[in-house]
Amino acid sequence: MAWFKVDDNFFSHPNINEISLEAIGLWTLAGSWNANYFEVFSRKKSENSEKNPEKNPGKSSEKFRQDFVSLSTLRMLRGRKKLAKELVSAGLWVEVDGGYMIIPGREEERSRREKGAARERKRRSRAAAKNVTNVTRDITVTGA
Image (cartoon, rainbow, N blue to C red; front, side):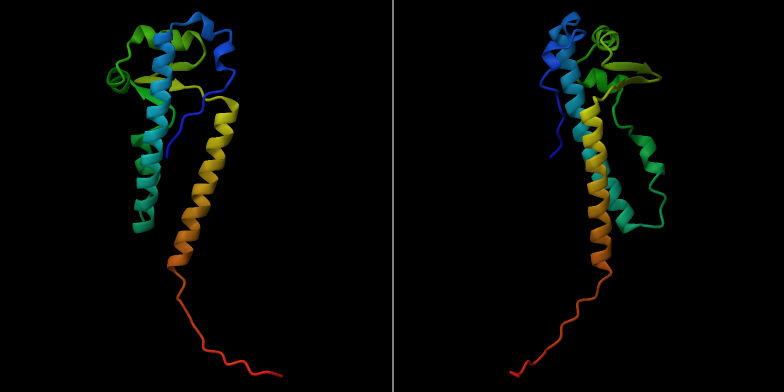
């Protein structure tokens, strides 16, 4: 299950008090959409690389950038450029070509790295398990 972490001190951040609740709602929707989409994208990318290890998995990463909100995604989330500009002014987003980048907090960034590392360990473990042949032996033990 995907998740989008919000700091429990978010309500008291000085920049937050300067933007509308509508902009905060857009930030929350975009963050949860991004976390969900990234999890689905990562899972599909991992499944494809397990099925076709000779394929270059890096090529598909161009289709989705983590923490990126495209202009079409902004519209899908019922957001407006005015609200996005509020988020930019509050330091929560940065405007880039084609959309906006969500600025992750330090805790969120660390959690993502840890989740990514765990996902990679699990992928390697599954790949290794597929290469292991099950061997059983019948051993008779006699008392000494």
